[in-house]
Length: 307
Image (cartoon, rainbow, N blue to C red; front, side, top):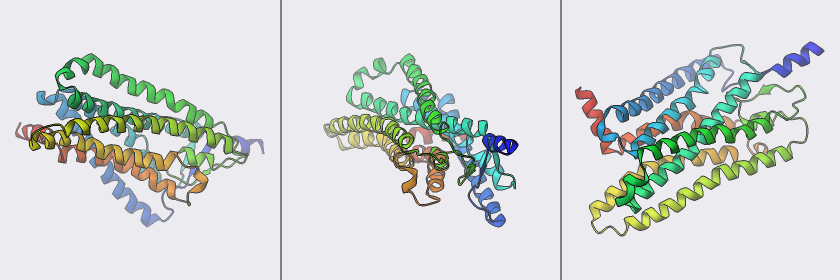
């Protein structure tokens, strides 16, 4: 009995997306393609920003940071999921499970903060164009980017600590393809209402505070854009914000669905769908949103092809 309890305490079993072998192979092919597109798209943006002098601006500096975050985010979950799709033994150690949760949460919260900074960058560029280069200097941009990573990796500690502090009473089967907060909490055999409430409140603070700042920034941005006399100037100003607004809606929408509602209120399997969209589809879509709607990026890509 001692050995059995020891084993249970040291590992979890991930049920994954499907138990059907044919479906698993099909999913493996699909998500391998998704991962390849994610890697290529985000890596391309990073290369373009580094090599093209026209993209050496704060806006594209933060965009390259977003691409790097998305690369890390998808890599923190997809390789493990792909391995499990072709594996009979879907066991993940306790330490690896905690590490995966900490890394994914840290990267997600870093992206959450980075999107606020990108909104602030657009706010300064449109509302204070004459002071833009002074306010958003190179050193300020570097400090802001570094701050997003530091804050993200610090804020996620409380989530992971609270989640892994619950008593699972030997329950170790996770109905998911990753170690996610709601799924680990669902294993709890004790009264976890207080823990869920604390995590829920922290989630509200972490998500709603940035959203509030972004909304305030865009209210001021739109107010100033409407003051622009020429219609072409208004279109150009809206174009520089449109891509960011789309990314904000997609990212925060899926994040709020995942972490701002008690896990018990969702039907079984809903967490998997949300995680696929938030952690796999969104990092793939971000480069497409920015490249398809951004003439500067498309021009830089054309120059790279010619070289």
